[in-house]
Length: 168
Image 1 (cartoon, rainbow, N blue to C red):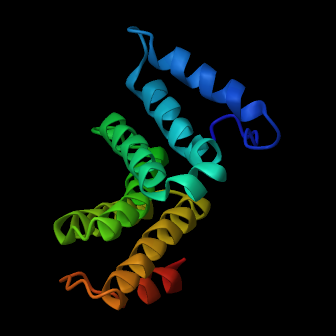
Image 2: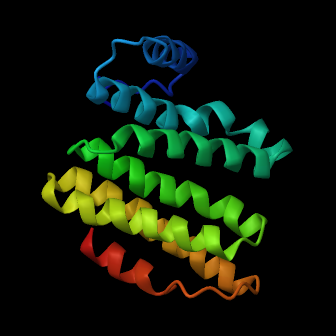
């Protein structure tokens, strides 16, 4: 994200992942750089854990994505940055899937709150960041609709997706 390079093309994502992991192993890393590396690992997650991994173990892949998102959110704590908003909105989105699979309504509610928090945080940033965060939050609320379809009773407003998409 920070480099503006599409690491997901070809096998270069493996190199990007190794670089991020090496950077995160350093003790002298600034909080801003730690956030960039955590968000990049989250960004690479669907490439790393997508495809056959999702076909073989969709719950496990979703749990890994939720963990990567939680790590990015933790790194974002106290940092005013569009990456902080992206970490929250994206984590909210990816955390909805394991919440539905495990039928954990509390987790689904928290995921919805994270995605909404990221969308709200994005209001102070430029339009592309806002649009991306609103897309993540809107998609999280689409998943909430799916939760209702499969019989989960959740206090989360499933119509919020329409509002978020209209803003972006």
